[in-house]
Structures are given as structure tokens and as C-alpha cells.
Image 1 (spheres, rainbow, N blue to C red):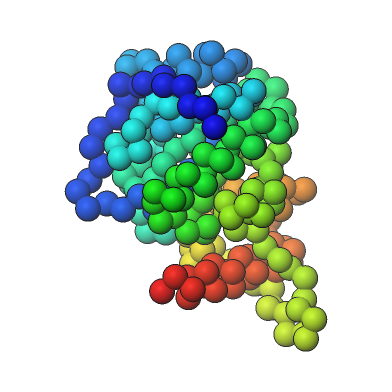
Image 2: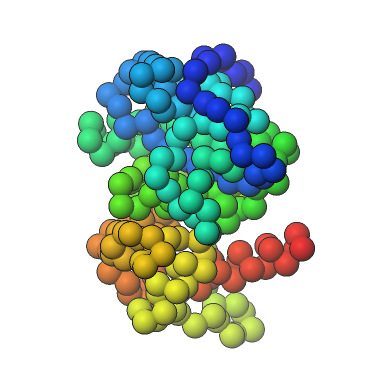
Length: 243
């Protein structure tokens, strides 16, 4: 894995004592990778990330991991309103929904796997805290979007993916109902009203974009309920192993 130094001036100190326990994945959402790199390194833009992965798999480092990069903006996850304070941000070059959203390349995903594994060796980041920009800012963001291969990445320990198949011995976890959806999404980490000023349908759409990308209608259904139940069970099991 070769990393190209491409420093950005847009960073500051992390709050004292803040753990680095989140990984936030983005797409650049600009016409070209060159434009994205220029913006991430422009002091007037006041945005940055720790890394950018280009379409050919080349990795650019902008901000040292011990510093706070400015990538998540107004955001929330699992009670944390300063996501930048405790996260690593990775931008992945893609024009995004505004400029002609396209699938991510194999070299990009291979580079992301290698980069993420190194980050996990340096920081204790649980799979449930590997999130999309749209997860932490559902009212504003859609990235990295419904074409992002979350299931593939989960096979390498990068993020969670639900197993909704009933166990062979029976006893499948019941689907979460529409009445319990908001509370259960909050339990998983999402910001929901009234804790966060964002319409619930936007939160549901973000959840679908990550875990059920085939239909993004912002409406809770039984399939969403089964997926979230499976995710909560996985997150709880992983937490018990590390306790």
C-alpha cells in the first residue's frame, strides 16, 4: 500500500481525552478527483479528511490521524454531536449523485480494505462504528450512497452487515415494528427526533441506503425491521466479546 502525502491545512487538535473510535466513509461528490483534492487542501474551503482514495486505488494522506479533520460537519452518532472529534474520515473519489454517480472501482475497495485494516490496528474502532456520512448526517448527505459495497467490506471486518436468515435451530429475532423503529434506530446509533432535528423518514432512508439499498423510500417495513433487529443482535454480540 503506497500513500501519497497531500497535506491539508484544514485540521485542529482533537479534544483532550477523546478516543478515536469511529470511521466515517464519504464520497467526494465532485466532477474529478483533482477537483476534490484541491478543495480538501484549500484553506478557504475549511474542509478536509484524513485520506482520499482515487479511482486507481492511490491513497492520499491529508491530515495526521491524531489530528481532527473537518469532514463530517453537523452530525450525530450514538450520542456524540462532535463526530469529527473522535473519527477518522476517508473520502473516496466518485462524482456522486450530483455529477453522475457511478460504481466504486475494485482498486478503490482493495485500497480501502488495506487502509482500514491499518487504522484498526492503531485505533479500537468497533464494526458498528464504521458508518456512512449519510448515517451521521441524514438530513444533508447521501454519501457514499447505495452503490457502496458495504456487504463486501463487512467480510473483511469493516462495518456490520445483517444476517437475516433464521438460525438452523429456529428462534429468529422478531422484526422491529414501525412503532418501535425510532427508538431502535436510536439504540443502534442514529440521531432521531426529538434528540436531533431531522425528519424520521430521512433517517430511515439513510438506514436503507446503507443496509437495504434496493429500495430507498424512507418508509419502515418488515424487511427494515428484520435488518435492524439482526444488526442490533450483531452489535450486542460484538460488544459482549470486547467487554
